[in-house]
Image 1 (cartoon, rainbow, N blue to C red):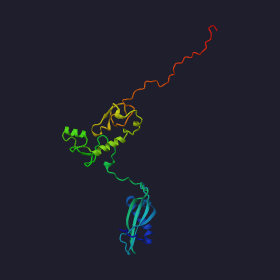
Image 2: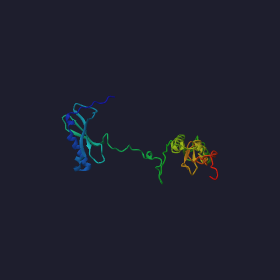
Image 3: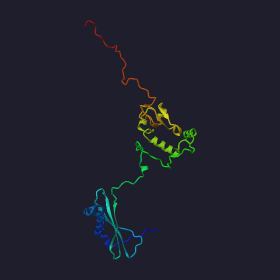
Image 4: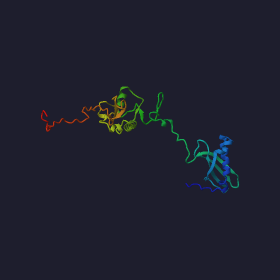
Length: 265
């Protein structure tokens, strides 16, 4: 499909800057009042030829004039005034709008509320419902590949309404592993041992048992938090206090080569 040809408007449409400015000031007056309208429409910035869908010899064309918007809070915006004319007919104002320019300050793209919430945003009394089609969860009455979930389902019938799906567990495991208590944390890299070999390590149940657990050492910075088996800190249960003196003590030396003066001298 070929693009429609560009209409070359007569010079009178290009030169109709005053007509376009008057239309912009009339639009500004509706919001700001007549006294402030003239000051709200700044210098003429550009004129652009529009594309006509079905140009005819009787149709002169369409152009859009742009003026700087001199309004508080609208830095970089511009007035857009579109003019059109038929052959030998009057110039008509098609549209007047206030549009953001290339360097305009505009609001960020709108994001749905449920996508704006971030970890840590939930406060006391806040409710965060999950979507019915959340792929992190599956109905609790379906067969699961997590042994711990199956044990709960056997013990209490159908058990929980929804449980973590495989993708939900994988996402959780990746997030925990990359977090502050994962094997790549600065604390873990300088630790004398890993959590997987620590006596204070409480493994999780289910399919994440081999990778994560909770810290039960009240003196650890991760106490009460989920930690990866590869994480570690200075409060490892196998850390032994060094009782040796940090100061090197020289051995006692006897010098038999000292000449003693005779008595009575």
